[in-house]
Image 1 (cartoon, rainbow, N blue to C red):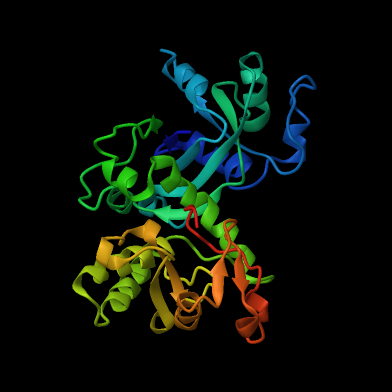
Image 2 (image 1 turned 120 degrees about the vertical axis):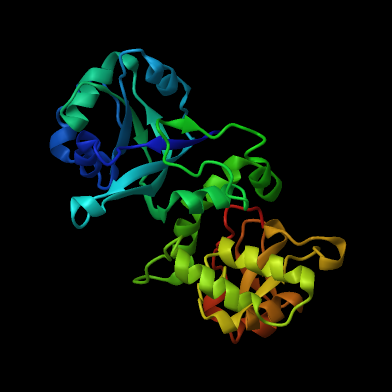
Amino acid sequence: MAVWMIAAGGLLDKSAIDNYSKTLTSPISAARRALIPNSVSLPSGDLYAWGFPDTPKGGNRKKIADIAIGDTCFFCTTEVAGKRKDWKNAYRWVARVSGKVDPAYFSSVSKAFWDSEKYLPYLLEKPVPIDLGFEEFSKLIDPSGAFYKKSPQGSTKLADPFKLSYLITQYGSVDSWAESFVQTPLVASKSFGAGKAAPSLLDTDSLENRAAKFCSVEVRPEQASFRRKLFIAYNGRCAITGCSVVQALDAAHRRGRKWRDGHNDIRDGLLMRKDLHALYDAGLLRISDEGCVQLVEEALEHYPELDGVQVACVGLVV
């Protein structure tokens, strides 16, 4: 699988801005779907899509052939709230590619989706809202902030192994990193219960401030970095309950990982509420291979609501 930066409209690209609500920020309407030829097979249920402009030199024809089902797309779009002079670009949506369109129907599907035949369409899972500035995006890819720190000028695949070495070291692959943006809100929502919204992935200023507070407690020097990485990765929330009270959280090493052996990156830990960390270390709370909480009888009596909860594991294998 691949990860793409999709330039989905700049400050002056009114046509792209007009298209957001048609297929990206909300499902494609029944009226638009009715315009698609019957010979085009589309999945039932809510449908989302985006497309590459069909440029005169044909460069985007190669991209539409290259993009694949399961790829992750970060959409650089324009914030259009407020006065036009205040509009700005940032990565505002992330979604996986869910389907491709037969090239024979590019024009007719593009016309149905966006009232224009000039786009090369592909289908998406429901986009997840994010708010990720370019500097922030750059520092997630590498703490130095040296790469990908400007607005993409076109849709580009993240493929340079040198620029992506930090992500590959931390997550095993760029795709695993990108998967965390798509999966975390969906998995976490199962833990927060009906009526409670899944957390925003990137409330950056407050998250950074809370992370600093979380790391300010007296810990072994090598643990400060571990604590901060876990706090940011889990958006400052307990992986099991979603608790966001800084003083109630701990950076827990996964079973079998030891700080003395250098097991101090994101894959080695879970952000947990302090009481649950104590249960985990005591063997009273376990996490199955499928990522579900399992409580032994002694703890089950006091925490029955947590038994079977799916852990928000940031796209990593528990």
